[in-house]
Amino acid sequence: MKNKLRFISLIIVFVMLINVLLICFGQNKVHAQSISTDINSIDTSRYPGIQDRIYQLKAKYPNWNFKILYTGLNWNDVIANEYTGHGSSPKNLVQKSDNYQGEWICPICGDRHYDNGSWRCASESAIKYMMDSRTALNVSDIFQFLELSYDFSYIYFKRRLKFFIAKYNVIVPIFSSS
Ligand SMILES: [Zn+2]
Image (cartoon, rainbow, N blue to C red; front, side, top):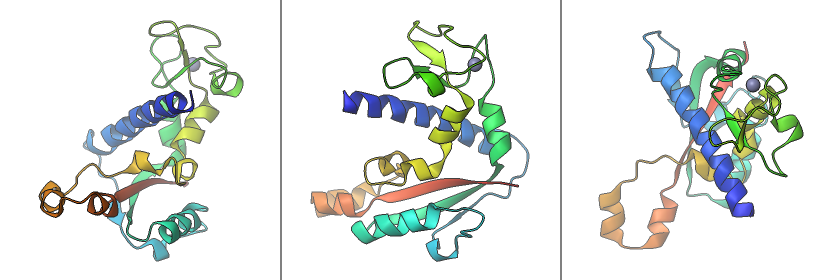
């Protein structure tokens, strides 16, 4: 059951990340987007709670490489863009269950059914929770940020699982607050 919930959560986050990437790359607007491997230089007043969580993960898994994706996107704009489509085609859905009710459900759409009937429109606070990188900066959820571009030739050459694990690259997207 726990794995199923995690799987559903991962699907929700995956859809959200796809939307963010489409916003980043699908428009002709120029965004000040950049990727940095310099964890020490994260502005902790602008992005609170990111650096210390990465340090904790690095302490446990020193071989993992963390990259920060500065999306250049404004947090409020992103949330507003995700919280749309009420009544017709919401961008974000949650599968109604004992674990996903109450605050998870959009108050505008309420119990309105979407897709196969078991899905409800996600609330704004649910979207904020799932899109906040800090939510996933822990040992069990960090894998949703795994970079999917392994050096397979290197892995094949080594033929050892530990090298596969050692080469985790994690990309953490963060948003501007102003
Ligand atoms: Zn709604």
